[in-house]
Length: 420
Image (cartoon, rainbow, N blue to C red; front, side, top):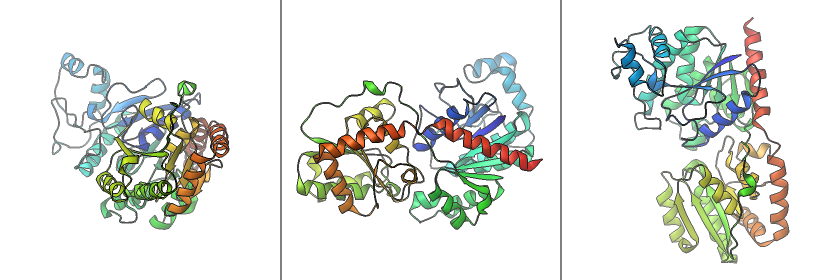
């Protein structure tokens, strides 16, 4: 089974949960003996793990025919793509993309991020998809999140192969209901054109059906999982008097950071033996710093900025409690990562991972009193901490990407079966 996947980010260079989920899912799927995955991202950095899939950088795919010698291509593409592959892809150019700015090889530059001209980059990525659809051999197309839906749709129209899309989030989640009409239109078209839609939670599935008017028969839930931490036992907690409560994620309105600050203020009314960490970056960071100052708790608050890789795991291992007060969270992998490291988690009922976790405390995102009570209980009662730590770790160690991969494969088989 050959899958052509379109994604936007891939570890170790990630900007959010999309890259983490893309890695875990593809790694889990690759354990199936006949799975062959080609994963396209706008701009690889060269240090991605390609031991279980093939990565193609959209920035190395020619979309405009340029006459170049074999030696020149070999020199310019060193470490990115073989000259043979470049010339093969160049033969797949069927449309005039000279309106798009390209380099001497006819390739488009991509930021590898979420730039101000994101809609333009999505359109350019679609152009790359057309070349790949004409050039590559595959059985099914799989598009991850709205940024890649146009690429998937175009590849489907060119190749005649079925398209499945993976909804990791919708604009209703990201915008707290203040939906961007351009993004909504891209999402809706992708959903309508897809042969099947996979959602990361029942919560997201309901949004797709109710907000986008999609037939429930073609929408399935495939819950995310968590990648095992290979050296999990090497992480230890530094002995200290104060307890540490951590928020880790984008500091945006979707993640509910203001509720974390308000709950912290409630806890600190009862005890001063707790420190609060808000790790991450985002457009609401300065407002949250101001709110902590306004509540008179700035001396108990730390804002270390964006964390990645081992930094994340070290921070979670040092924490006595992890909290994710998201207003609308399609899934949320970070509580699972915290629980792997023995850190008890508090999550909102409005998160998809709440559907599969039994040993995390769940509150409504807006219920700062319940949140504060849960934090207080974890940091003040050793038996509560110990129970959640041990049972939570045991629970998440049984939530595997391999099982999610089997569900995706069953959907592939279903979709291909419907075509025959």
